[in-house]
Amino acid sequence: KQASNWMVGFQNVYFAFLLCITLIVVLIEVLPIGWRALWLSALIALFGSVALGAAPFFWILPLVALWLRGYRRWQYYAVWLTLTALLTAYFVSGLTAPLSPPPPLDRLGLVAHFAVAFLGAPIAPIPRLLIGTALSLFGLLLFALNSLVLRQWRPEWLRSWVALAAFSALSAIMAAYGRWIFFDGVSAYPLTDRYVTNGVPFWIALLVIMTSTMFLRRRGARLELEKLPRYLVPLADWLQRNLYRINSLSLAGLGIVFLVSLVVAQVRLPNDKPIGECLRTLPITRDFDCARDLAAGRSNFLPVLVRADQLAVRRLGIFAREPAVEPRFGEVAVPLEYIGTGTPSPSSFDGRFVTHEINGEMHRVFRQRSPAAHDWTVWFQHITAPTHFESALYVPPTEQVSQAVTFRVYGQFFLSKERQLLLEQRFDPRQQREPVPIRVSLAPFLNQVGRLMLILETEGNAAQAMWIEPRFVLELTEEAARAKYYPPQ
Image (cartoon, rainbow, N blue to C red):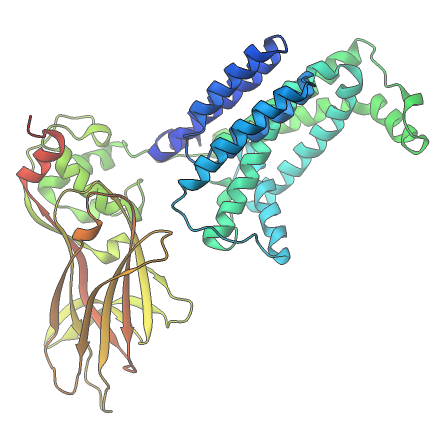
């Protein structure tokens, strides 16, 4: 799972993120209580706050560590909370995603479920939501029992690990809330590779706390039952008599689960020989059949192709281990079907790719029962090549009188509520018998980093509105490729 996680570029911030939060906890624990530790921690938090979605963690989480460490002067918290307010305000002012209201009460259970399963991802042997949830609940129970015992025996052994576990818990809650905002629901996503990293500190903290209680129990440590409420005495007495056995069996069981997960997890890396060879020769062969199942993902097909052509001028970087090939420039058409099947509008009819005969010739078409709308999401990462969307519009005549259909093409950056109308074309089958070719420039979305949502919409009452061979067309030129990596001095 981690092998796949390391390959995902935008998630590499997780590792810097985790390093910074660990350094803060270590400094607070190791250095004497005072301003030096506080200012050094604040400096690291300042650096870490620029990471993706990280600002709230670097200022809220250390408050737990500071209090457990023994910081009691109000001046410490006044300075820290002031910095918290300033950096959080700066972070919020830079948000480009739309702010959404809190989830309704009937969705809080889904958010909580996602967060709990998130913590179980590092050791879940297979991505099943029930398994991840059960492992996480079991780990949380062990953490609570051992923390309560260790808090009475040696509280100074506990504080760093509670803060580190709190980091994983806050990560889980933020990821769960974020998925609710943008996707209105949860699924097996908390168990995917990219969510593994931030759940690991919880299990490290649990391992250390369980080992600590077992060590102290072997040294003869006992709970002070007389200080507990009377109704808790039987439970506490049973716990201290059986905690060593419970921890031993639990560690053995979790260890077996973890080892099984290592055996079961099989990661397809993008530099596997067949895929690497396909990418290396793609600028010459244009062999889309070998490239359509790239490990980078179907929605990433277009930028991978463009980057391959640009990098072929010198070298294909991580996509190949061999010397660069001589690229073949010119127009390259990427069928829209290779990028995905599209996401239908909740109010539209289903659309699909089919083979259809038009004027004696067979064509691959995307068929919609209007009114309908579908969108495709494509990553654009500083694409410099001129890019267009091409297709032909057609409404087949029927025995009944068909009404006209209005075809529209929209472009919209992902998570942005504003969409831009790129084309509007009316097709009347009572007057038109030939398909109408279209070529839509995507120039407004080039030279930017982000996800473009291309939306195909039809409006009317025709039974079948058709987009004939919809495709992205890249005008790849040697000048554009060289300008990207060899800018004029």
